[in-house]
Image 1: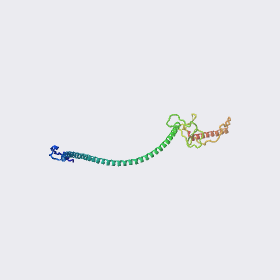
Image 2: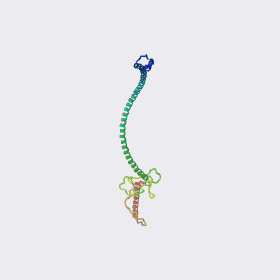
Image 3: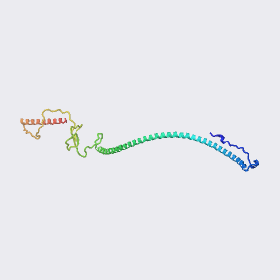
Image 4: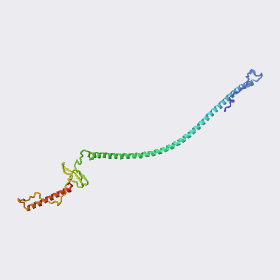
Length: 260
């Protein structure tokens, strides 16, 4: 703390001297010495007062600077704490940056892998698109040529030629429809719109006897006299029996084919 007394001035009680106030008989040299001492004492007191005031001002300035330095010291302490915190945060940030760099490197590798996968997928997609285009052409062809069970309009089969084969027909002919195995229809078969085979006829009673499957002359004529001899009648009876046997053979054939 500053010394307040330094700021108090020194008062010098000096009686103003002059050559006339000195006793008579003073040597002129001594007279000048006495007069000079009075002036020097006044100057010394002035210098002392100036020095004391300067010392007081210096102490006040020192106290002000001490206060400023104390404030600076406190602020420096805060700054040092802040710097320490920043240093810790920088270390943490550097650690996080290093971790991020590692993750970025990993992500870069993953991205390269994904880019390779995407390139592979693009190739596969192009292949699939090509396949889809081919399938679309095939489907278009199928749509133009397929037979639908739900349509009510006429549908054409083998319109461009060839035969429709049902089953594993190993030796196809030129017939339009060829079936390996049996064929089942509910009404009948027609040729040029004329029915040639229709539904089965019922109500027939099977005949008995032997069928005639051999050859015979349908134009054979029998001699007939006016009196019908026994031989003529026997011959006609024989051939009438043959005709009946042929009818029996035809009946058997119709029955075998399921027509009666």
